Image (cartoon, rainbow, N blue to C red):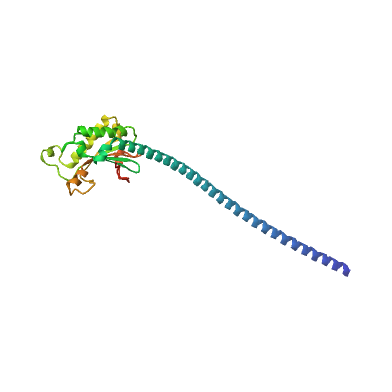
Length: 251
């Protein structure tokens, strides 16, 4: 009888021990599963963030590719413009050799345009805004080469700082009017030579954009001039603005 009771007691104790081990293992497995699930959720979130970043980088790469293509196109266009302007510059220099040699005309090649400076006494009689025969010949040489370009053209009239006086006051009250009338006469003549009128603008700077001080007759003579500016094709003739320039053409 004693043996039987002890046997039953050991059996119950063993059974309890086995039950405790099984419950603990289950809880550990559940905890491990929950931890793995949380890690999986974290990895999914990381994956989503990385996929979003990859999409952003793809978009940036596409934008850069497009920008590079645009830049390359602009560089090609700019190179062609420079080449075309260089050809026009060379042609003008060849056509105006005697005028360049005498200092009556200067041709300047800018970064993306050209400027032709013509002394007013080459184009006009004193106090007049009508282009004379000598001036017509010079302007015809210039127009011959500019008519072949697509660029806007701005013609600027400049005077010295000596006020208008005498009978001229009734027609040209100030240097503004005289400079503007002279610029308009040049534009009109160049239109007669075949340059499309919509490409051109006549502008008066009066006495307010001198090349040199007006403190000598030589200086005042340099300031009395017509400037014919061949502008970049991307600009309008209204929005000229100063451009960097190379040295004037010299023979």
